Image 1 (cartoon, rainbow, N blue to C red):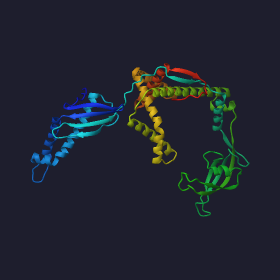
Image 2: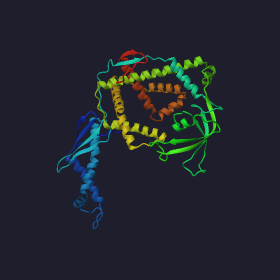
Image 3: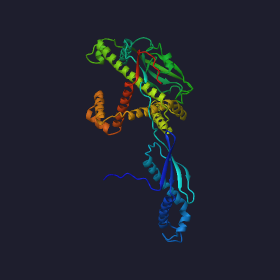
Image 4: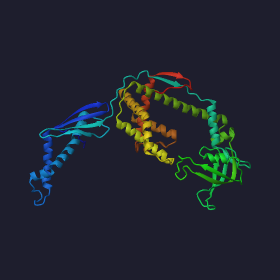
Length: 443
């Protein structure tokens, strides 16, 4: 059986005003006869159910019930008619509301129609007129030998080992020690924290340990005095000076593997150093091309925004910022950082310009997509699913099942549509080739 589409209520008149591109005000007029009929029905039910001492249930005079319950019944009647009026407006005017309607300017006088306004925010209707020949700069995709060397060095550092040495500790060495706080327990009763490792000079160390442990040797004891700053996160240590007794147990020097074929084979079995460098260069080139594409997209988006005045609904900006704020909270929670109301306010203020740019760009791209009838079919989505599975080594059928089980399919469809829209605009853009190290201004 096919569900019937609701019909507008007779006796309800609606007109729409647009004070802003993102706002609609529905002016509602409900005929007095419609209100009176709805009120009379509620009063009849109330007469049957109302109870009052001295009267049998259902035998209370109508005038008595109306005197006692009339005001409440009129409010209930209005509350019942408001959503009916809103549904009538939705059907008649095809409103794409993004907020719930707000009731304003309610007027209800004797023998007069019931009138009120319903104010909502809507997704603004955007028309893009000037998007041919957008000027963009495309930098050359290039990878230097120095950039390859930097990756090689990072790989070598990541595979470095520490070997025990019989000499004073220097920056970059790893020290194994037993640590005893001296100021938080009676003398002789301070707890020993065994087998603590410090790499001298590491950024996450307290500066006092980096400075005062240089030159220590295995078997030596060294007292380290730490002056904690007034803004230190730990309340118990904030602004204090604490002494630590350090018993050095071992000094180990970092040994970095050589940049040779043996090292290359440890990264990818059977690979020579020359082949590893070529693999790295190819990966860096692919990343450079990705960044270039991102720059082109941002230039296209910036040019569209600069050429069109897009007025954003406040609720849309608010929701966008709230999503980012949730991520901000989660990030700080992972780092163990408390977040204050002031931090939230600063985040919202700092993030607003980027949020507005992102939303304006989204609306303008959607407008181009509709005007140019850029489509994404189910076959396109499935092809992309197969590509993602192949890129990540997923089983295609299992990944497809995952995609179909939630919102992932819609996200893939949206990403494809957005990519095709950018590609369409770039195909008509005025592209200037520039050097790989050129400064490109993003509008």
